[in-house]
Image (cartoon, rainbow, N blue to C red; front, top):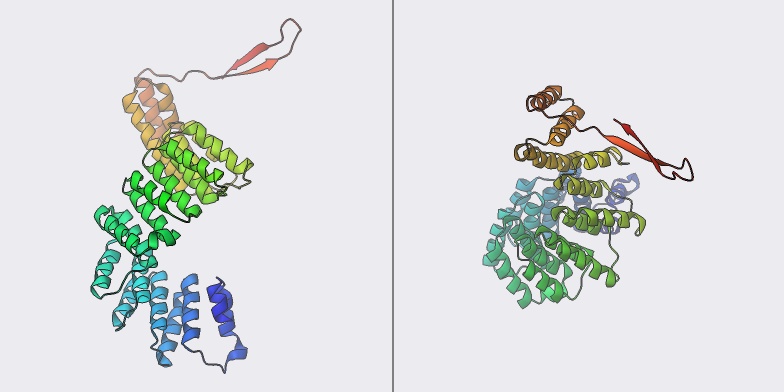
Length: 381
């Protein structure tokens, strides 16, 4: 029961079975401890993980699977030094132990260490498997180390992993895309025997990162033709591609299509992409109105996207010092944040430069007579 719960993604249930009072007289074995450590890793429960570590020592368990589970647990609980200590104490390291520590460093934001460990792994005559390669390609992509990644590409072909493992192929094309080689990424994509939504998303995003918005949209269309149903991640990627390439109209089109045609409820990531799209295009008033009318609470990333656009827009004051609209917009942004001294500074700068905001107006069409079907009534703000 403990193994079943842990493997099927029910870590809480696995721990409940273990701590149930009715099993007080039943001692755990290596399989039990390994599965419970996996449950702790999934939950990030460091305290219970340490307790199980001590229990394993007390019961004299020195099985490789227990050590591997300990490495994984400590790494996923962000105790990478403890994970590394246990790894170094294992005398006969198998590929699972190497993968656990390599993945642990990657999950904790380290990129150089996985590459160093790969070198040691090869020196110890341990052949990398699919899990190793996925992590290493990610590290190469983060560091932009093209030579190492491309040499491992040849290794994946030699081992037959590229055509048989969708995760390796996806990681490889993502590496090429992030290193600016969209042509090689597309070659890997086309040669893959199996593709999942992550694969499509990586390639669509790869075009977007290279500024090829039309390539992203064309590939999204191909995906629909292949009857692959887009998920929320795909739409995040396509909206991000529109943002990076300034395709405002297309971004709105896909945002509405996501809601109306595919019945997705937009997440904060989708709203952030739209704010980023509008802000990058300099349409800050529209972005601010979009934020104020969102049905969800904005988070830090969304405001970060908006402020990035503000930073871009503030440079317009230097490029177009005679445009009053830019000053008014910056003044309103400062006011919304309660920074009144900056508001006064901007207004004073406008006064000194003799700038004033053009009056706004609204108009309504009224049917008032047969011979005057559309009389326009305007009110000056």
